[in-house]
Every structure is written in C-alpha cells, then in structure tokens.
Length: 66
Ligand SMILES: [Zn+2]
Image 1 (cartoon, rainbow, N blue to C red):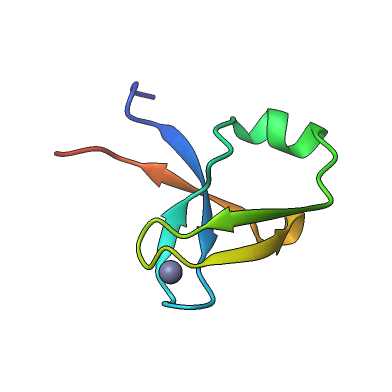
Image 2 (tube, helix red, strand yellow; image 1 turned 120 degrees about the horizontal axis):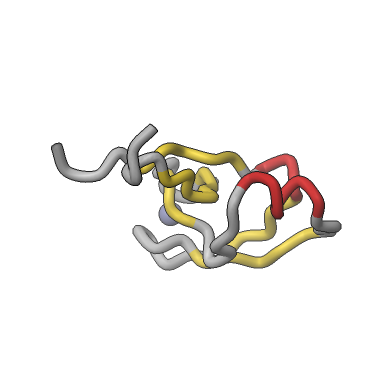
C-alpha cells in the first residue's frame, strides 16, 4: 500500500484507440456515488472529442516511474 496506488479515471478513445486520462479527477468511491449521464471529453492524444457514458469509464492504477 504505497502512495503510488493512485487510480486514474480513464477512457478509451474511439478515434485513435488509445487510453487517456479523463478530465474528471476523482477517486473510485466518489465516481461510484456520482450520477453521471454522459460526458463530452476530448482525447489528449488525438484531440478528438467524444461522448462517453458512465460505463465507458474505468480506473487504471498509475504506478508511477519505478
Ligand atoms: Zn484519441
């Protein structure tokens, strides 16, 4: 249990297929509790904006540089 366990809310971009960090920065507990209809987010890799539903979001663990 280190400080490196830092879940990052992420999305898969339908345009370029890459995974990018959501503009929503929150922990899994907060995310589960919130009511989210759909969000337009812009991919940080290809810069295309897409609509995402709550089910499209997932957490990845940022393990940081090792
Ligand atoms: Zn993209």
